[in-house]
Length: 425
Image (cartoon, rainbow, N blue to C red; front, side):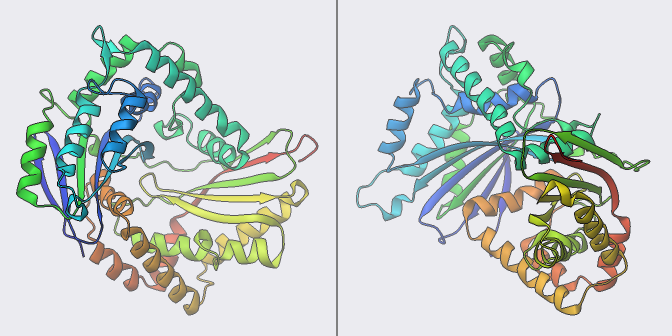
Protein backbone atom coordinates (compact mmCIF):
# COMPACT_ATOMS: atom_id res chain seq x y z
CA UNK A 1 0.00 0.00 0.00
CA UNK A 2 1.29 3.49 -0.84
CA UNK A 3 2.45 5.40 2.21
CA UNK A 4 1.45 9.04 2.65
CA UNK A 5 4.02 11.43 4.12
CA UNK A 6 2.60 14.76 5.24
CA UNK A 7 4.55 17.90 6.04
CA UNK A 8 3.63 21.58 6.19
CA UNK A 9 5.41 24.23 4.15
CA UNK A 10 4.35 27.86 4.65
CA UNK A 11 0.90 26.83 5.83
CA UNK A 12 0.36 24.40 2.95
CA UNK A 13 -0.01 20.72 3.79
CA UNK A 14 2.16 18.74 1.39
CA UNK A 15 1.26 15.07 0.92
CA UNK A 16 3.96 13.00 -0.78
CA UNK A 17 2.99 9.58 -2.10
CA UNK A 18 6.11 7.94 -3.53
CA UNK A 19 5.36 4.92 -5.72
CA UNK A 20 6.69 3.27 -8.85
CA UNK A 21 3.17 2.08 -9.70
CA UNK A 22 2.55 4.82 -12.28
CA UNK A 23 4.55 6.07 -15.26
CA UNK A 24 3.28 9.58 -14.64
CA UNK A 25 3.67 12.04 -11.81
CA UNK A 26 0.46 13.67 -10.62
CA UNK A 27 0.21 16.96 -8.75
CA UNK A 28 -3.13 17.85 -7.15
CA UNK A 29 -3.69 21.15 -5.38
CA UNK A 30 -6.86 21.47 -3.29
CA UNK A 31 -8.10 24.72 -1.78
CA UNK A 32 -10.94 24.51 0.74
CA UNK A 33 -13.20 27.13 2.31
CA UNK A 34 -16.67 27.16 3.88
CA UNK A 35 -19.60 27.08 1.46
CA UNK A 36 -21.14 30.55 1.52
CA UNK A 37 -23.61 32.44 -0.63
CA UNK A 38 -21.30 35.48 -0.76
CA UNK A 39 -18.34 33.57 -2.23
CA UNK A 40 -19.65 30.45 -3.98
CA UNK A 41 -19.86 32.05 -7.44
CA UNK A 42 -16.42 33.64 -7.35
CA UNK A 43 -14.94 30.30 -6.22
CA UNK A 44 -16.72 28.64 -9.14
CA UNK A 45 -15.09 31.12 -11.53
CA UNK A 46 -11.59 31.43 -10.09
CA UNK A 47 -10.00 28.07 -11.08
CA UNK A 48 -11.14 28.52 -14.68
CA UNK A 49 -9.50 31.95 -14.79
CA UNK A 50 -6.35 30.40 -13.35
CA UNK A 51 -6.14 27.79 -16.08
CA UNK A 52 -6.57 30.44 -18.78
CA UNK A 53 -3.10 31.93 -18.44
CA UNK A 54 -0.09 32.70 -16.26
CA UNK A 55 2.33 35.61 -16.18
CA UNK A 56 4.75 33.58 -18.34
CA UNK A 57 2.04 32.15 -20.62
CA UNK A 58 -0.67 34.85 -20.60
CA UNK A 59 -3.07 33.21 -23.06
CA UNK A 60 -4.75 29.83 -23.06
CA UNK A 61 -3.07 29.03 -26.37
CA UNK A 62 0.39 29.83 -24.99
CA UNK A 63 -0.28 27.78 -21.86
CA UNK A 64 -1.58 24.80 -23.83
CA UNK A 65 1.43 24.96 -26.16
CA UNK A 66 3.74 24.84 -23.14
CA UNK A 67 1.85 21.83 -21.76
CA UNK A 68 2.43 20.10 -25.11
CA UNK A 69 6.13 20.90 -24.77
CA UNK A 70 6.09 19.10 -21.42
CA UNK A 71 5.52 15.81 -23.28
CA UNK A 72 1.77 16.26 -23.36
CA UNK A 73 1.19 17.24 -19.74
CA UNK A 74 -2.49 17.63 -18.86
CA UNK A 75 -4.06 20.37 -16.75
CA UNK A 76 -7.59 20.21 -15.31
CA UNK A 77 -9.58 22.16 -12.77
CA UNK A 78 -12.58 20.98 -10.82
CA UNK A 79 -15.02 22.01 -8.11
CA UNK A 80 -16.80 19.97 -5.48
CA UNK A 81 -18.89 20.23 -2.37
CA UNK A 82 -17.77 18.18 0.61
CA UNK A 83 -20.30 18.65 3.34
CA UNK A 84 -20.40 22.38 4.06
CA UNK A 85 -17.05 22.95 2.31
CA UNK A 86 -16.38 24.27 -1.19
CA UNK A 87 -13.22 22.76 -2.71
CA UNK A 88 -11.32 24.03 -5.77
CA UNK A 89 -8.97 21.49 -7.37
CA UNK A 90 -6.15 21.92 -9.88
CA UNK A 91 -4.64 18.74 -11.31
CA UNK A 92 -1.46 18.47 -13.37
CA UNK A 93 -0.24 15.15 -14.82
CA UNK A 94 3.21 14.84 -16.41
CA UNK A 95 5.23 11.92 -17.70
CA UNK A 96 7.86 10.58 -15.33
CA UNK A 97 11.16 11.90 -16.62
CA UNK A 98 12.85 8.58 -15.83
CA UNK A 99 11.07 7.06 -18.82
CA UNK A 100 12.23 9.71 -21.30
CA UNK A 101 15.23 9.29 -23.57
CA UNK A 102 15.81 13.02 -23.37
CA UNK A 103 16.89 14.38 -20.00
CA UNK A 104 14.31 16.99 -19.03
CA UNK A 105 13.46 17.99 -15.43
CA UNK A 106 9.73 17.46 -15.95
CA UNK A 107 8.79 17.31 -12.27
CA UNK A 108 10.59 20.58 -11.61
CA UNK A 109 8.85 22.18 -14.58
CA UNK A 110 5.46 20.85 -13.42
CA UNK A 111 5.87 22.16 -9.86
CA UNK A 112 7.00 25.51 -11.24
CA UNK A 113 4.00 25.67 -13.60
CA UNK A 114 1.49 24.71 -10.89
CA UNK A 115 2.83 27.42 -8.61
CA UNK A 116 2.69 29.93 -11.49
CA UNK A 117 -0.97 29.09 -12.15
CA UNK A 118 -1.95 29.89 -8.58
CA UNK A 119 0.62 32.46 -7.47
CA UNK A 120 1.58 34.23 -10.71
CA UNK A 121 -1.57 34.37 -12.85
CA UNK A 122 -1.89 36.50 -15.99
CA UNK A 123 -2.59 40.11 -14.91
CA UNK A 124 -3.11 43.55 -16.43
CA UNK A 125 -2.86 46.66 -14.26
CA UNK A 126 -2.72 44.57 -11.11
CA UNK A 127 -5.91 42.59 -11.73
CA UNK A 128 -7.07 39.67 -13.86
CA UNK A 129 -7.32 40.21 -17.61
CA UNK A 130 -10.84 41.50 -18.27
CA UNK A 131 -11.03 39.49 -21.50
CA UNK A 132 -10.30 36.24 -19.63
CA UNK A 133 -12.76 37.04 -16.84
CA UNK A 134 -15.56 37.86 -19.28
CA UNK A 135 -14.87 34.72 -21.31
CA UNK A 136 -14.98 32.55 -18.19
CA UNK A 137 -18.12 34.29 -16.92
CA UNK A 138 -19.88 33.27 -20.14
CA UNK A 139 -18.63 29.70 -19.76
CA UNK A 140 -19.78 29.61 -16.13
CA UNK A 141 -23.28 30.73 -17.13
CA UNK A 142 -23.37 27.88 -19.64
CA UNK A 143 -22.25 25.35 -17.01
CA UNK A 144 -25.02 26.45 -14.65
CA UNK A 145 -27.67 26.57 -17.37
CA UNK A 146 -26.67 23.15 -18.70
CA UNK A 147 -28.08 21.62 -15.52
CA UNK A 148 -31.58 22.63 -16.66
CA UNK A 149 -31.13 20.60 -19.86
CA UNK A 150 -30.09 17.45 -17.98
CA UNK A 151 -33.17 16.47 -16.02
CA UNK A 152 -31.39 13.83 -13.95
CA UNK A 153 -28.89 16.41 -12.66
CA UNK A 154 -31.66 18.98 -12.37
CA UNK A 155 -33.76 16.71 -10.15
CA UNK A 156 -30.74 16.02 -7.93
CA UNK A 157 -30.10 19.75 -7.63
CA UNK A 158 -33.72 20.60 -6.85
CA UNK A 159 -33.99 17.90 -4.20
CA UNK A 160 -30.94 19.29 -2.41
CA UNK A 161 -32.30 22.85 -2.69
CA UNK A 162 -35.62 21.82 -1.19
CA UNK A 163 -34.21 19.53 1.45
CA UNK A 164 -31.41 21.80 2.66
CA UNK A 165 -33.16 25.16 2.65
CA UNK A 166 -31.30 27.64 4.89
CA UNK A 167 -28.26 25.31 4.98
CA UNK A 168 -25.07 26.12 3.04
CA UNK A 169 -25.26 22.72 1.38
CA UNK A 170 -28.22 23.96 -0.69
CA UNK A 171 -25.83 26.13 -2.74
CA UNK A 172 -24.92 24.84 -6.18
CA UNK A 173 -21.27 23.90 -6.64
CA UNK A 174 -21.07 26.21 -9.70
CA UNK A 175 -22.51 29.18 -7.87
CA UNK A 176 -25.49 31.44 -8.50
CA UNK A 177 -26.47 32.65 -11.96
CA UNK A 178 -27.70 35.97 -10.59
CA UNK A 179 -24.27 36.78 -9.10
CA UNK A 180 -22.15 36.31 -12.21
CA UNK A 181 -22.71 39.61 -13.98
CA UNK A 182 -21.61 41.71 -11.00
CA UNK A 183 -18.19 40.03 -10.80
CA UNK A 184 -15.40 42.27 -12.14
CA UNK A 185 -11.70 41.61 -12.70
CA UNK A 186 -11.05 43.78 -9.62
CA UNK A 187 -13.53 42.04 -7.31
CA UNK A 188 -12.36 38.60 -8.43
CA UNK A 189 -8.72 39.55 -7.86
CA UNK A 190 -9.55 40.86 -4.37
CA UNK A 191 -11.25 37.54 -3.60
CA UNK A 192 -8.27 35.66 -5.05
CA UNK A 193 -5.96 37.42 -2.58
CA UNK A 194 -8.28 36.41 0.26
CA UNK A 195 -8.15 32.79 -0.96
CA UNK A 196 -4.35 32.80 -0.82
CA UNK A 197 -4.46 34.17 2.73
CA UNK A 198 -7.30 32.11 4.20
CA UNK A 199 -8.07 28.88 2.32
CA UNK A 200 -6.88 25.56 3.69
CA UNK A 201 -4.49 24.30 1.01
CA UNK A 202 -3.32 20.74 0.39
CA UNK A 203 -0.81 19.71 -2.26
CA UNK A 204 -0.52 16.04 -3.26
CA UNK A 205 2.40 14.68 -5.30
CA UNK A 206 2.07 11.06 -6.46
CA UNK A 207 4.62 9.13 -8.49
CA UNK A 208 8.15 7.79 -8.55
CA UNK A 209 9.58 10.77 -6.66
CA UNK A 210 12.55 11.37 -4.39
CA UNK A 211 11.03 12.93 -1.29
CA UNK A 212 13.75 15.32 -0.09
CA UNK A 213 14.38 16.71 -3.56
CA UNK A 214 10.62 17.12 -4.21
CA UNK A 215 10.14 19.04 -0.96
CA UNK A 216 13.05 21.33 -1.86
CA UNK A 217 11.42 22.15 -5.19
CA UNK A 218 8.08 22.84 -3.52
CA UNK A 219 9.74 25.13 -0.95
CA UNK A 220 11.46 27.12 -3.66
CA UNK A 221 8.34 27.60 -5.83
CA UNK A 222 5.33 27.77 -3.50
CA UNK A 223 5.90 31.07 -1.77
CA UNK A 224 2.49 31.98 -0.39
CA UNK A 225 1.82 35.32 1.28
CA UNK A 226 1.46 35.40 5.06
CA UNK A 227 -1.41 33.02 5.70
CA UNK A 228 -4.10 32.73 8.33
CA UNK A 229 -5.93 29.67 7.02
CA UNK A 230 -9.33 29.21 8.55
CA UNK A 231 -9.74 25.88 10.23
CA UNK A 232 -12.72 25.07 8.05
CA UNK A 233 -12.47 21.44 9.03
CA UNK A 234 -14.01 22.57 12.30
CA UNK A 235 -17.14 23.68 10.47
CA UNK A 236 -19.60 21.04 11.54
CA UNK A 237 -22.86 19.94 10.09
CA UNK A 238 -25.57 20.78 12.54
CA UNK A 239 -27.83 17.77 13.07
CA UNK A 240 -31.31 18.46 11.78
CA UNK A 241 -34.33 16.68 13.14
CA UNK A 242 -37.05 16.03 10.61
CA UNK A 243 -40.35 17.52 11.83
CA UNK A 244 -42.49 17.03 8.74
CA UNK A 245 -41.68 15.17 5.54
CA UNK A 246 -41.74 17.64 2.67
CA UNK A 247 -43.33 16.68 -0.64
CA UNK A 248 -42.53 18.80 -3.67
CA UNK A 249 -44.03 18.30 -7.13
CA UNK A 250 -42.65 20.31 -10.04
CA UNK A 251 -44.11 20.25 -13.53
CA UNK A 252 -42.15 20.73 -16.74
CA UNK A 253 -42.43 19.61 -20.32
CA UNK A 254 -40.83 16.19 -19.66
CA UNK A 255 -41.89 12.69 -20.64
CA UNK A 256 -39.95 10.76 -17.99
CA UNK A 257 -40.64 11.62 -14.36
CA UNK A 258 -37.83 11.94 -11.82
CA UNK A 259 -38.69 10.73 -8.34
CA UNK A 260 -35.88 11.69 -5.97
CA UNK A 261 -36.00 11.16 -2.22
CA UNK A 262 -33.73 12.58 0.49
CA UNK A 263 -33.08 11.00 3.89
CA UNK A 264 -31.09 12.19 6.91
CA UNK A 265 -28.76 9.44 8.11
CA UNK A 266 -27.36 11.35 11.11
CA UNK A 267 -24.03 9.65 10.34
CA UNK A 268 -21.04 11.27 8.62
CA UNK A 269 -17.55 10.16 7.61
CA UNK A 270 -16.27 10.98 11.09
CA UNK A 271 -18.60 8.58 12.88
CA UNK A 272 -17.82 5.02 13.98
CA UNK A 273 -20.98 3.83 12.19
CA UNK A 274 -19.74 5.10 8.82
CA UNK A 275 -18.64 1.65 7.59
CA UNK A 276 -22.02 0.17 8.52
CA UNK A 277 -23.67 3.06 6.65
CA UNK A 278 -21.67 2.17 3.54
CA UNK A 279 -22.83 -1.42 3.87
CA UNK A 280 -26.42 -0.25 4.41
CA UNK A 281 -26.34 1.86 1.24
CA UNK A 282 -24.79 -0.99 -0.74
CA UNK A 283 -27.65 -3.36 0.16
CA UNK A 284 -30.36 -0.68 -0.14
CA UNK A 285 -29.55 1.02 -3.43
CA UNK A 286 -25.85 1.52 -4.13
CA UNK A 287 -25.26 -1.30 -6.60
CA UNK A 288 -26.90 -3.38 -9.33
CA UNK A 289 -27.67 -6.18 -6.85
CA UNK A 290 -29.28 -3.75 -4.38
CA UNK A 291 -32.91 -3.76 -3.28
CA UNK A 292 -33.93 -0.66 -5.19
CA UNK A 293 -32.56 -1.91 -8.50
CA UNK A 294 -33.93 -5.43 -8.08
CA UNK A 295 -37.38 -4.56 -6.73
CA UNK A 296 -38.20 -1.20 -8.34
CA UNK A 297 -36.57 -1.66 -11.72
CA UNK A 298 -36.24 -5.40 -12.39
CA UNK A 299 -39.18 -7.08 -10.65
CA UNK A 300 -41.81 -4.32 -10.88
CA UNK A 301 -40.46 -2.78 -14.11
CA UNK A 302 -41.38 0.64 -12.73
CA UNK A 303 -38.16 2.57 -13.29
CA UNK A 304 -35.61 3.28 -15.99
CA UNK A 305 -33.07 3.54 -13.18
CA UNK A 306 -33.24 3.26 -9.40
CA UNK A 307 -30.27 3.84 -7.13
CA UNK A 308 -29.09 5.55 -3.97
CA UNK A 309 -25.91 7.32 -2.96
CA UNK A 310 -24.46 8.88 0.17
CA UNK A 311 -23.35 12.43 0.81
CA UNK A 312 -20.73 11.26 3.27
CA UNK A 313 -19.73 14.59 4.82
CA UNK A 314 -23.27 15.89 5.11
CA UNK A 315 -24.95 12.74 6.37
CA UNK A 316 -27.52 12.47 3.58
CA UNK A 317 -28.85 9.50 1.62
CA UNK A 318 -30.29 10.35 -1.79
CA UNK A 319 -32.51 8.05 -3.88
CA UNK A 320 -32.80 8.70 -7.62
CA UNK A 321 -35.32 7.07 -9.96
CA UNK A 322 -36.57 7.72 -13.47
CA UNK A 323 -40.19 6.60 -13.85
CA UNK A 324 -43.32 7.00 -15.92
CA UNK A 325 -45.32 9.77 -14.21
CA UNK A 326 -48.30 7.42 -13.79
CA UNK A 327 -46.15 5.05 -11.72
CA UNK A 328 -45.42 7.60 -8.98
CA UNK A 329 -47.53 6.02 -6.21
CA UNK A 330 -46.43 2.45 -6.98
CA UNK A 331 -42.74 3.38 -7.15
CA UNK A 332 -42.91 5.42 -3.95
CA UNK A 333 -44.64 2.55 -2.15
CA UNK A 334 -42.00 0.01 -3.19
CA UNK A 335 -39.15 2.35 -2.21
CA UNK A 336 -40.73 2.81 1.23
CA UNK A 337 -41.03 -0.99 1.50
CA UNK A 338 -37.31 -1.42 0.78
CA UNK A 339 -36.41 1.04 3.52
CA UNK A 340 -38.76 -0.73 5.93
CA UNK A 341 -37.10 -4.05 5.04
CA UNK A 342 -33.68 -2.58 5.87
CA UNK A 343 -34.90 -1.37 9.27
CA UNK A 344 -36.38 -4.82 10.00
CA UNK A 345 -33.20 -6.63 8.99
CA UNK A 346 -34.88 -8.23 5.99
CA UNK A 347 -31.71 -8.93 4.01
CA UNK A 348 -29.73 -12.12 3.53
CA UNK A 349 -26.21 -13.17 4.43
CA UNK A 350 -25.59 -13.45 0.69
CA UNK A 351 -26.55 -9.79 0.22
CA UNK A 352 -24.19 -8.87 3.07
CA UNK A 353 -21.29 -10.82 1.56
CA UNK A 354 -21.89 -9.62 -2.00
CA UNK A 355 -22.06 -5.99 -0.87
CA UNK A 356 -18.81 -6.25 1.10
CA UNK A 357 -17.09 -7.76 -1.95
CA UNK A 358 -18.34 -4.98 -4.25
CA UNK A 359 -17.34 -2.21 -1.81
CA UNK A 360 -13.89 -3.76 -1.48
CA UNK A 361 -13.42 -4.05 -5.25
CA UNK A 362 -14.73 -0.53 -5.81
CA UNK A 363 -12.28 0.88 -3.28
CA UNK A 364 -9.32 -1.04 -4.75
CA UNK A 365 -10.25 0.14 -8.27
CA UNK A 366 -10.42 3.73 -7.05
CA UNK A 367 -7.00 3.43 -5.45
CA UNK A 368 -5.56 2.17 -8.74
CA UNK A 369 -5.51 5.69 -10.18
CA UNK A 370 -3.62 8.69 -8.75
CA UNK A 371 -6.80 10.76 -8.95
CA UNK A 372 -8.84 8.18 -7.05
CA UNK A 373 -6.12 7.76 -4.45
CA UNK A 374 -6.10 11.49 -3.72
CA UNK A 375 -9.89 11.65 -3.45
CA UNK A 376 -9.90 8.81 -0.92
CA UNK A 377 -7.13 10.41 1.15
CA UNK A 378 -8.73 13.86 0.99
CA UNK A 379 -11.71 12.52 2.96
CA UNK A 380 -9.31 12.48 5.92
CA UNK A 381 -8.58 16.20 5.49
CA UNK A 382 -12.25 17.11 5.22
CA UNK A 383 -13.33 15.16 8.24
CA UNK A 384 -10.20 15.55 10.38
CA UNK A 385 -10.53 11.80 11.01
CA UNK A 386 -7.83 9.66 9.53
CA UNK A 387 -9.01 6.37 8.08
CA UNK A 388 -6.07 4.45 6.57
CA UNK A 389 -6.94 2.30 3.56
CA UNK A 390 -6.06 -0.84 5.51
CA UNK A 391 -8.63 0.16 8.13
CA UNK A 392 -11.22 0.70 5.42
CA UNK A 393 -10.78 -2.81 4.10
CA UNK A 394 -10.75 -4.44 7.53
CA UNK A 395 -13.68 -2.50 9.00
CA UNK A 396 -15.96 -3.17 6.04
CA UNK A 397 -15.34 -6.90 6.52
CA UNK A 398 -16.21 -6.54 10.21
CA UNK A 399 -19.62 -4.88 9.68
CA UNK A 400 -22.31 -7.05 11.26
CA UNK A 401 -25.97 -7.48 10.43
CA UNK A 402 -26.84 -5.80 13.75
CA UNK A 403 -24.73 -2.76 12.84
CA UNK A 404 -26.54 -2.36 9.51
CA UNK A 405 -29.94 -2.54 11.26
CA UNK A 406 -28.77 -0.02 13.88
CA UNK A 407 -27.77 2.36 11.08
CA UNK A 408 -31.04 1.78 9.21
CA UNK A 409 -33.02 2.74 12.30
CA UNK A 410 -31.30 6.15 12.32
CA UNK A 411 -32.27 6.95 8.73
CA UNK A 412 -35.11 9.49 8.53
CA UNK A 413 -37.19 10.39 5.49
CA UNK A 414 -36.87 14.14 4.89
CA UNK A 415 -38.03 15.22 1.41
CA UNK A 416 -39.79 13.66 -1.59
CA UNK A 417 -39.24 15.54 -4.84
CA UNK A 418 -41.06 14.64 -8.06
CA UNK A 419 -40.39 16.21 -11.44
CA UNK A 420 -43.27 15.30 -13.72
CA UNK A 421 -44.89 16.28 -17.02
CA UNK A 422 -47.47 19.02 -17.38
CA UNK A 423 -50.26 16.44 -17.22
CA UNK A 424 -48.73 14.44 -14.37
CA UNK A 425 -49.51 14.12 -10.68
